Length: 96
Image 1 (spheres, one colour):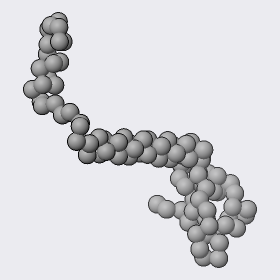
Image 2 (cartoon, rainbow, N blue to C red):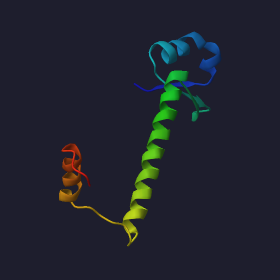
Image 3 (tube, helix red, strand yellow):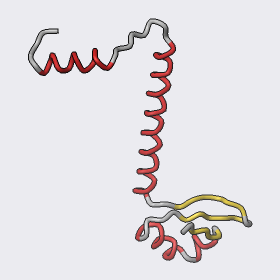
Image 4 (cartoon, rainbow, N blue to C red):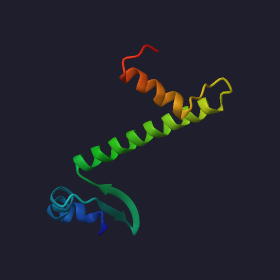
């Protein structure tokens, strides 16, 4: 369940918010004058969020690079038979 609290709760009910953030591992969304202001979360949750974002960015960059290479007319493609045939020959100790 999403926890939305007025920013004044951060001062007036800090132990309650701390419990939600640290013990229940939930983010608390704070509002000011009825509008979203900030989010409070544990360091562990923040670290995981940043790690996930960095991983997603890495994957996105890798896919962009693959798309560019696929567009290159000089890119050599291998068939299924070529790839697995090469692996089988290596496993059988044959020179390639």
